[in-house]
Length: 142
Image (cartoon, rainbow, N blue to C red; front, side):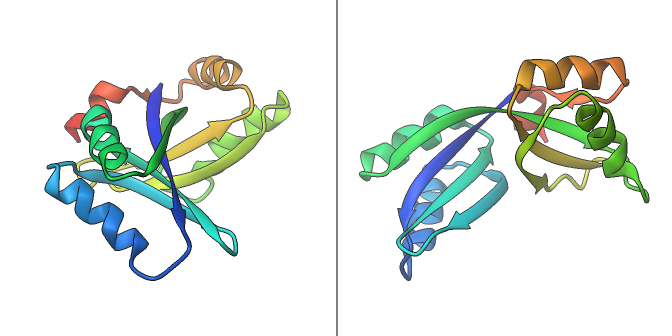
């Protein structure tokens, strides 16, 4: 199980750069990110090497920061690799709420970050299928 931080930001020029500069100045390394926007606001979801440091730095600058449990899953880097993860979950009615890629040059396989509607059930199904879930401690070392 991993933990991501979510930052709610105004959808205007320079706000994303402001967030990344705060993290840079705090010595926080961004490992993965996803940005979803609406007309007025965006949700920036991040996997970082130090959640506590990132959260403190962002809150100190007035940003609203949330934490969410997600799964970092190793996906075979081959045609159908993603379906090896998704098919058994779909068969047992586990829904993917969102997902995004994780940059990891040290691994021959891809790593995807998933938010499921039933994270505990997803974790059990993935274990039964022999699919590797990467824990927070491992992520921060990548």
